[in-house]
Length: 115
Figure 1 (cartoon, rainbow, N blue to C red):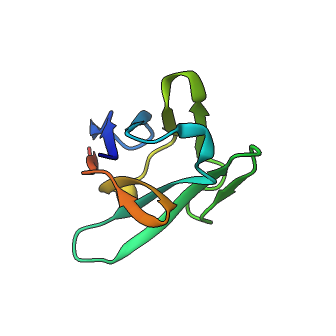
Figure 2 (figure 1 turned 90 degrees about the horizontal axis):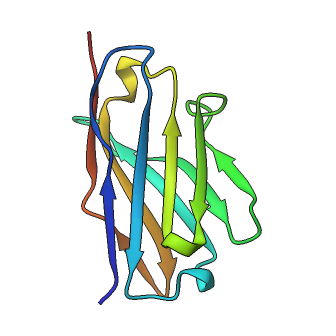
């Protein structure tokens, strides 16, 4: 079956960086129209972070623009989220997502930004 597995989360200090990975299996990666990253902070709803289309077009939430970069490696069936200059308000569980007839989600990876 389709699986999305996130990794790369952890505890970092403000101003630090993390690179999240999401590896997809059970589906031909190249047919997916958009790969997305969402996040959910404690006590808050799910929030869009970034998207990458098949054609290479990127889209970012205002909070992520200029600090985060979404990319992918088709040969590895993997999408990445490079996060720089992290802030405490970036603390959240980060989820990988795509839609192909069904809305698919990974298990999430925890990011904590704290001194």
